[in-house]
Length: 215
Length: 215
Image 1 (tube, chains in turn cyan, yellow):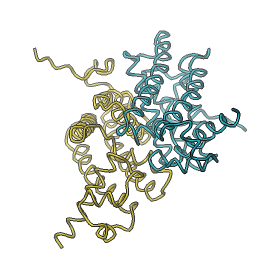
Image 2 (cartoon, rainbow over the protein chains, first blue to last red):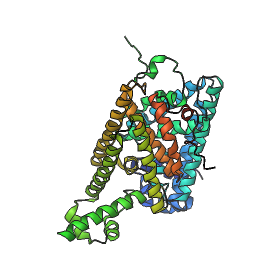
Image 3 (spheres, helix red, strand yellow):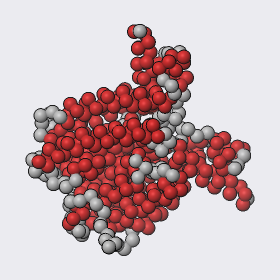
Image 4 (tube, rainbow over the protein chains, first blue to last red):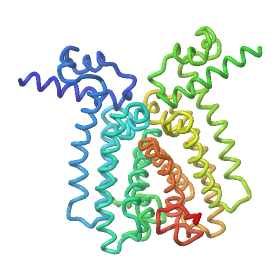
């Protein structure tokens, strides 16, 4: 049993790495099994198809990311600070990925949306569910900020969609330029999209992150 | 000579359609030639590789889109209205694509960025050049709007990047939901990102497009 369970994990882990590096279409089951060090027969013991595996990779990645998003977005800090922490965590994740594989690989869900959502309905539906869950989580925080009169936006759901869309768009640029500093704009833009007053007025008029003096 | 030139155009046209429908990795040269009705030998007469073809597809698509962007962004209307027209043209393009192939295929450049920019440097560089040109075009319009005191944003280049990032993010959602109405948010969000006063105050506080009564 121990070995069997380990094989499934190895296939999932290898598939996630390969999908992040090269997308879904370019991969074959044989290559995934080789990278996982697992015979091809094991693959079909756990997964009915490559699409079935992709759904499992998406689910596993989302289980981890959802936990992180919940931890950040439901902590005790003021609501807008939690959104800022979410952007900082996104940048840290992309930077860690860049350090481990040499290039910013972007958001797994955004990548698969642009590559596959118009081709397989099963992937489209799963990705829709994930983005809807992200928007719902962000919307709750925006609603809290509005209750505190920190943002002026009228439609919190639409605003949350726009914040997540901006996040995906800036991650696209971070991948294109292999530069996670592109994500610095997220906080300022989020404040603008929400009609928020900046905690420090200067952060609305410059695109620099808060300067920390080490001198 | 007429037939030769026609073969190249047919290959380019078939490749663009197939890349929009199924991405780059999933395609083979044989399939492209079959769709174009051209023998495989002709392919290698015009293109050294599939990547070489992809660069040609990108260039041709950008030549057309750049012309449209110039026509819209350099017309005689007030600058913010030109940005609105750009978003409306983007939605019209995506809707036309949806009507012709049944599904929103998204932005060719955004699709290829997330699928390929971390895999081939030639595609990465070409896509960077195109997005930089888009940002420069948008920035000129924002600078005009700032001269007219219609927007308050300090860094026009950073603001233009954010407008293009938001555009890519919302197109991603339009593709995910196969629904071009997702792009309705672009205008309101653009005004918010630029610190602009809305031409009609209501458009900053609702997410509805201007209501037209037919009653």
